[in-house]
Amino acid sequence: MKRHESLAEATSDALADDQVLLVRIALDRYRGDPDVLSAAESARFRRMRSVGKRREFLAGRSAMRRVLAPLIDADPRDVPIEHGGHGKPEIGDHEGLHFNLSHSGDQGLLAVGRRGPIGVDIELARPGRPFRRLARRFFAVPEFDWLDGLPAADLADGFYRLWTLKEAYLKAIGTGLTVSSRAFRFDPEIDPPLLVRTPKGHEAPECWAMHVLPADPGYHAALCMPAGRFDYRQVSLPGV
Ligand SMILES: CC(C)(COP(=O)(O)OP(=O)(O)OC[C@H]1O[C@@H](n2cnc3c(N)ncnc32)[C@H](O)[C@@H]1OP(=O)(O)O)[C@@H](O)C(=O)NCCC(=O)NCCS
Image (tube, rainbow, N blue to C red):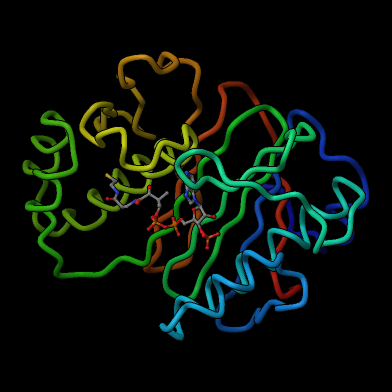
């Protein structure tokens, strides 16, 4: 993984086609700025009751706008963020830029690239969840069988590894849960797990590259983007 850069460095030159910009957001320290939100975002922000949801929304959307603005030569407030049919934020007419955001616990993750649709997921692991029950409901049968065969000590790690990959794929295709999480699957025996089946009507598994991302202790993160070689650039907010 490439060294950390400042936001100004990382966005001063055009993001190349074979680069992905990964922005790690410390939600406990990066507050965001209500002044950069669009009118619709401000309204949504004002309607939010949960302190945690407000914090992650403001930080996430501020980061999204501050990172994308220099890449399309616009003010953060004027970045034309629209929402796909199932709510995926996208840049209007795309400007060749694709991005996706995820937040969990005290961390947010924003990925930006040019090659095509991106999906990212970060999860704060919560020990003691009913992993087998959740896997039976959300995972394809061979994925459940694999998880069910793991020693108890590896169960949580195996679950979150697969869960974040499945979420990252769903977020790349942008359908949310209108596509069943059991309609596509990974071969978890392979490291990193390999996408081996995609839902009917969607691009073949080999069209996608899946990546398990390094994450702080207690967190799991994954990225999905169109297949091919690429380099990471990394930024932290607030700066390091
Ligand atoms: C809504 C969903 C896209 C992700 O939700 P999530 O995991 O709870 O939340 P994350 O923090 O990872 O992602 C939320 C962000 O994704 C983006 N997003 C919203 N809708 C999206 C969509 N359809 N596709 C991709 N990204 C989307 C937004 O930026 C959103 O944050 P914001 O509104 O604050 O800007 C969807 O996949 C979902 O509902 N998942 C539920 C979990 C589940 O059952 N997963 C099964 C996996 S096996």
